[in-house]
Image (cartoon, protein in one colour):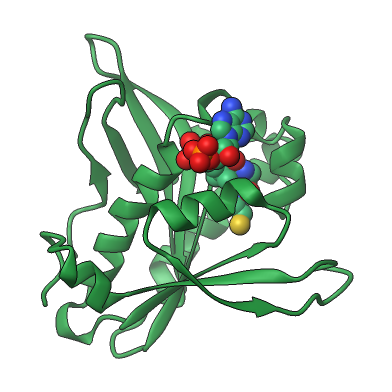
Length: 197
Ligand SMILES: CC(C)(COP(=O)(O)OP(=O)(O)OC[C@H]1O[C@@H](n2cnc3c(N)ncnc32)[C@H](O)[C@@H]1OP(=O)(O)O)[C@@H](O)C(=O)NCCC(=O)NCCS
């Protein structure tokens, strides 16, 4: 398997490492869900240590079945290179020969507003296009509710162009949504180093 996604350090932006969730991340996951914005946009909500352990077990099982690939996003901080959990990134439905897959993400409240989600998403995008070589997807999709303007900004900053409006489907999706798409051709045009063009 292609090495896990990563974003190199840049001025004012520490390096990001993406790796599968581990049982020891449970405390940080619970803490991330103390935030109202997370509880509103990043369901299902994780309430406590038991819920976090279950959620991480499920994400690890997804890796075994190949249903979805979920990553904890960690920022490398300080001269000793200590890692802190700052977010989550996921690609769902990625299969050899499958035409498309769907991406998702969140950033912990303490790390928002400094480009963590876009940098993680760009790394994940290259990884997803590269994972199965020529048999990889031709497009990646990103969905968000119309009033999630922060998520819309992340999509646009990462070259996921708006491709349609998804009608509301209450009670889970009370408002319309945006469908954003990034194609493999776009990734190739930008000469993403990992993607075979
Ligand atoms: C959407 C989300 C992932 C953005 O993550 P991020 O790492 O903060 O991304 P960015 O730093 O690029 O900021 C994106 C936008 O958030 C807004 N923002 C900026 N600072 C912010 C802050 N401190 N707190 C909240 N939002 C902020 C701005 O609109 C920004 O866009 P801009 O850079 O064009 O001004 C994050 O807000 C989040 O986790 N939200 C809850 C979960 C969620 O909505 N997930 C997506 C579901 S579709």
